[in-house]
Length: 413
Image (cartoon, helix red, strand yellow):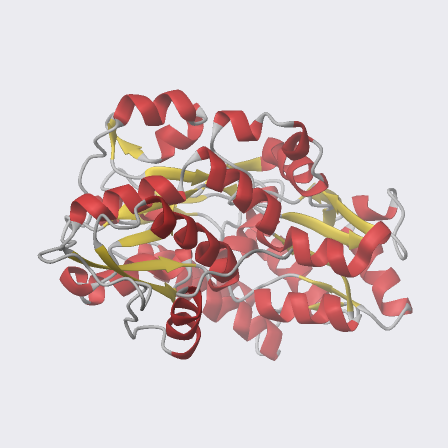
């Protein structure tokens, strides 16, 4: 898409690409700030994949408020999943505006990083109720809803799979292996690994203290035990058609043709569809064989929110920038450029969004999903367990011990 580039835009491009943290003035060199005009320096954090989108949004913000202040806005890539950790490292000097996953809201509020949102009624009127709820604690709104699509589903290449094939992960793995290709899923993140245990009826979640977790992924009782899921994972890990790979690796595999299906989210809908073209397919997650039964894979659901740092030195302008990023026009742009499902009611109900294959797949998967409410001790033990499986150090003999160790870490105080 071609668009007019204003003379000051390259400065922003240079600042964002060459120096994630270096501040570059975005004031046009031919326009001198008026005497006594306020200098507003703001830092915005967003996903690396959203870089071009945020450039265009900030471009519009600078045009909208041109002449009202001397703006110096810096974009720095920061994944929503790790936002809280990065903020806590130096809260008073961190980003002024930042995108984050909704499961981090309690921690951010407890740390004093967020203050109640002023325009409560406007946010409630213009956004889907579940997104407003996700951004609230005890009916107090602390962040702006940004997306209603922070979940995952199945991407697949129709050249290799029929609609019947995609009902079974085991069938898909066989087809991939027969063609010298791979089906991908990221096991280095407990977010995705939940789909296997959760689908089998095993549970994990936050205790009433809001900090520690409960988890029975090592259960030795019930129709399907933790060891049953572990055995299924051992089978997948050793299958020639399977690969555990991160988000970047998934896109690289799709592009070079080695990956023909994968578990991923809507943030990759646009590039994957561009690569596969008319063979692009999206569906709910398949079932997998576990203890002789077909188990429908579950998923975590969630929302992306936009926060304003309570310690921002220019909080009033930071709020305006956050409202601009999350407004109806820019949520529409976010969908067009990134394929992300909007929280804005008008945009979400548009024909374009309703006809999106990725959004439709996410909606079908929502029947088998639940909100992610997990304490911080969840992530590392799961990574350690799956890494051991992929490395081949987990065996039938030590599987239960490995599960017990994982759950002990997840539920640690």
